Length: 281
Ligand code: ATR
Image 1 (cartoon, helix red, strand yellow):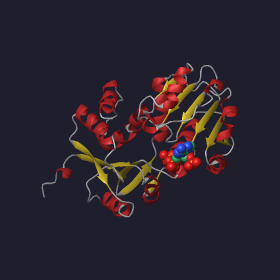
Image 2 (cartoon, helix red, strand yellow):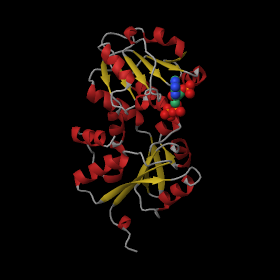
Image 3 (cartoon, protein in one colour):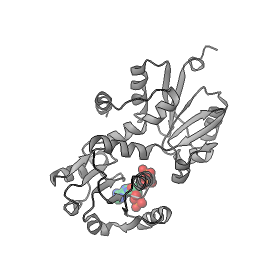
Image 4 (spheres, helix red, strand yellow):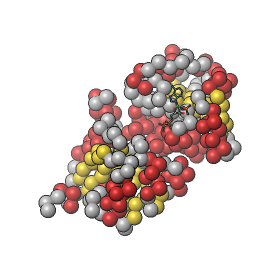
């Protein structure tokens, strides 16, 4: 069989649905840049079919070095991996898989992507002790973990369903505190970072007026939502004169470790790549 997968290096992103994924564009750009004989494909796999997909990945019949997993497979992927790393195990979610010696490994690069984006766009953003995270879902967990690793001493999680924020505070222990939405103004007071990890503002949907004036004067405001690039929250922050960082860079930076694992070269997040993805939005 003259299957091209038998020669080059190949990787995938699996999700359901998958057609809106920008990962093929990102990895395709890097493959071309390095002139690598390989491919990166988006594959729609249902939750019921994921175990078979992972089994084929493990035994090599699918011909892949590894790939990304996205919604709704991030949790199941950790359970199916033979060697989840400590981070994906702790988060209970993986976004990156690779195969070594017939075993499937998993990790989660969302937190790295989050930090790298801020480091690139707003050096010094982490010179503060207090951060406020809006939302308590999967994305929030990765962000809290990253902020904790970066040394923040107070991470306040504000969520519509306060019980979910409390679960995270219990899980992460000291330094992470839970609050209901009504507590937002108080908790923003003097904070140096405000992060939206919810879908609020996606596609420009209206968001409430946040009491951002309470933030420390040199605070940074960032949003995991990147469509539109300047979200309603970031627009509010700009009006108050705060530094803002859009969420597109997190998507780009989280892709770097996977590419390096599968294709053996460490890619860069260039302005050209950013423009390419923006043009596709
Ligand atoms: P993800 O894995 O992307 O973080 P998720 O686990 O579904 O997705 O979490 C979505 C987060 O956005 C939650 O914190 C959710 O609040 P609830 O826990 O109360 O559901 C939050 N969220 C979504 N829509 C929201 C809205 N309209 N207002 C406030 N919070 C919202």
